[in-house]
Structure formats: C-alpha cells, structure tokens
Image (tube, rainbow, N blue to C red; front, side, top):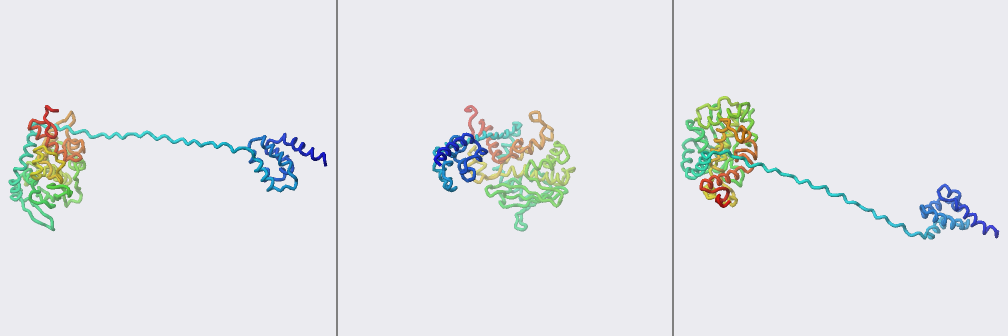
Length: 384
C-alpha cells in the first residue's frame, strides 16, 4: 500500500507525457476514460493549451475512485486559473457611399425666331390696336352671327357666310368681352358644319378659351396639343401643300371649298389648328393687362392674368407662309414639326411649355425694342 501511494502519481505523469489529442485521452486514467462528461469539460477548459490539459488531467487522476462525475466537473471549473481570452473586436467596415451622379438637366434652347422687321411691326401694331378695336369687333360678332342658349350652354352661330374666315376668327378673339361662360360655337364651313366648344379653361384664368371640336364622323379624333396635332393635320401631304391650303382657307369666305383634298381627319384637325392659333392664342385681354404689357410692367403681380397675346395669330400666319414657300432656318427646311410640333424647341413660341407667359414677355420685348430699348423691363441698350 505504501508503494502504491508513490507509484500512482508517477504512473499518471508518465501517461500524461504522451497525451496531446482526443485520441490520447482515451488512454487516460480511469477517472477520464470512463467519464465522457469530464472528458468534455477538460477539453473545453484547456482548449488548445497542451500544458493546461496535462495539469487538469494530473489533478483529476489523483481524485479518489469514489468521486462522482458532478464533483469532478465542479473541480475542473474551480481549478481554472487561465485568464479570460482577450475579446477580438469585430471591426465593421462601413461601405463607402457610392458617388452621387449628378443629373445633368439640359435646358431646351430658346428658339431662334427668324422674324423680319415687317412682321415684328405687324405683331406690335396688332397688339396695340386690340384695345381700341373692342367696340368695333363686338359689333362685328353681332352682325355676323347670333348669340343664344341651348341646354344651359351659351351659343354663338356664324350666319354670314360671305365673310372671310380670317375676319370671323379675328372677331372671335373678342368674344370673352361679350360672354364669359363656356360657349358652343357653330361654324358653317363647306361640307362641314363644325361644332367647337370654347371653354373657360382653368379657374385661375380670365378672358381665355380652350378649344374642343365635336364631329359626327366617328373615325376622326380631336387633338388639342400642338405636338399631337401636327401628324393628323399633315396626313400624307407635304408640309408646303398643307400650309398653302390653310392660308387659302383663311383668305376665303365660308362659301368657298378651299380645303378640297383634305381627308375628314385633316378637316377636323385644320379647324382645331386654326381655332387654336388664330383665336385662343390671340384672345384679347382686359385693359389692365394690355396696359401692363404696353408699359413693360412686372406681369407676375396679376392674378389671374387676363387673356392671351393679340398678335400671335399673325405670327402663326407668318410661319405658315414660310412653310408654304419652303423657306429654311439655319439651313433646315421649315416644317410643321419644327415650327409648331417640337415642344419647347418649337419656333412658334406659344407652342412651348408656358407658352402664354413666354408670348407675353416676347411681346413686351418687341414693344420696348420699338421704343429704342432692348430686353426685358425696358433696360436701355447702352446700359447693357
């Protein structure tokens, strides 16, 4: 018995010298070989530290045979003298924000108006005479047609077919000085009695009309935006021919079939085009707005703004003449597309976004140029 006390630790130490892996643990003393829970606890405590593993095994080997598994496991925990392993800080790399790509907004170039001095003078004269012609043109409306009511709609029917279309359309630019409600217009043209609604438009507008045609032919459609209107107006004809027919219509009375050759869709589109360019865009404002433009005042203070721009009907006719004559601008043949249907790059200024305000400012510039000034707000040319 005395020898066994000395031999047992020595035998345990010899065995420990060979232990380094899980496989070697299976040959450890009884207290480890037959106790999976302790084996697992020892391995967990020692980790990869072989010296620590040997120390734990030596202590365990000296426990008496009667020690139960729970006591062995507690003993292992108490004997842990290793400091807690250093915590490795997890470095979180924030992803770099992608470089913001600046959206380049290309502003449409201001159309270059190829206006002659003659047409500039005509436009300015038309605007100035708008105020003085109110009484005369209201008289013409009453002579050439009749006002009435139909199903709660105000109506105006043209009855004098001997009048030229251009004269009737000019008188219609004053109709808001007679009636301010929606008006149903009846315009008797050869082979077509056109029904056109002249609506008031938005509540923020005054003395304006918006054009909408009605047609019994179910195969035709209404187009009220310039860029939509160009294609059905042209049909399969050349730009030059269509422009010539429209000018002939304006110069003819209502008995003359001047639009012979137009399809049903072209006739409807022609009525819309002429009512928009010759009436809606040239609607005569009240005296307050006319005086403001003549005196080059800041128009933003007017709410609502009245009317549109008298003289824009003459500008439209001027471009029709250029298209009919196949004129060019900067080497490019003038067409309905680049004059009226090219949105903000249209040569006809009223066809772009905010065309009415652009037209008013354009008129102010023309008037001031006639007074020996240049540019908006009447700034003298020598001061620039």
